[in-house]
Length: 399
Ligand SMILES: Nc1ncnc2c1ncn2[C@@H]1O[C@H](COP(=O)(O)OP(=O)(O)OP(=O)(O)O)[C@@H](O)[C@H]1O
Ligand SMILES: [Mg+2]
Image (cartoon, rainbow, N blue to C red):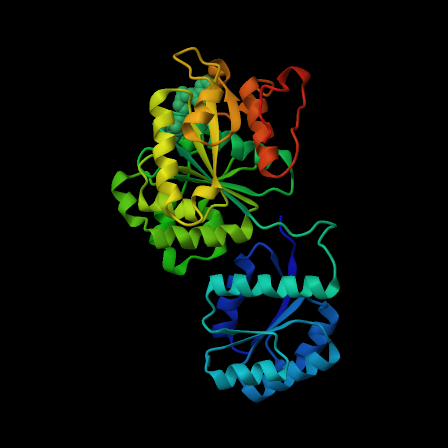
């Protein structure tokens, strides 16, 4: 859970106060401490409720609102003030800022702008106070794309189990898996979840999307992992555009510490959008010719776009399987990159977990595949291996 910002709001007009309140209530990191409909009472309200931030709507009476901003600035120095108004002209913005507001947003407030503004106010207050939240510095979300070098290479198995491990290993983690294999994805089956909503519902409601709706669209697994599934109907795939996905990712980043994308193998525009917005791209391969040849081709394509190639880390799955294995050394030479992670071949555990619709941490917690995935989750968080066992040392690479 992210650090909470306690907010007090004043707006004498019900018609603008309610949507603003609902928008704020949808933001997980916001706690609505107080709500007031009279400018003249608000200084007392702010003093008593001691919020981290106040929101002042200007439009009912600009003069009174500007006086209130100045008064609050004098009585509660250091308290950040966010002014909101439908008048977004330079003069109105300047007046509010000169009176002492720290930020200005135009009504109707757009969720993304509100989130960015809250983030800015939080960081500026953090640096003024010189404090860290709960003893730890605030961590930005980590966004991980998982893409395969051919069909059946293990992407969904990795995505689901990585997600469950990340969600399960730390109570501060808030993890969401988005199934972007829009046509044939099966993350819901792997987790035995029957979703009420899918990406198609989110796309259909994109213009009036708020955090409450978005969070309700994800279904939660017992491990704590949230899943946003692919559309049920194939024809609904066309509803999901790149800009929708961009909006959804930006909003989810504000609520989740980790986002994982299970991508298709078709390099679709949504796949590319997801990769562009990711911090890490796990490119899954197996030690055989087709897969490795495709890794080379994919690295070449991703390398042509600024910033994409550097994010790629190669994960070799099913290491130790018998059929026609190429050595790890040869694989590294072929693709011209180090292998970032290896997942052993563990047919019994993997297939058993998939057939049972449960993650490995539940079905086979001591299996080789689960331990490798648990350590991968830790490595992505910048931590060391969870289960350091002598016999596994040297087999897995921790680069
Ligand atoms: N490390 C492993 N050891 C043994 N079997 C594995 C391993 N990883 C995945 N599998 C098996 O490989 C099969 C394909 O895995 P998975 O569905 O995760 O691949 P995918 O890349 O998502 O496939 P698709 O192209 O259909 O999306 C599954 O039956 C899974 O159980
Ligand atoms: Mg898959």
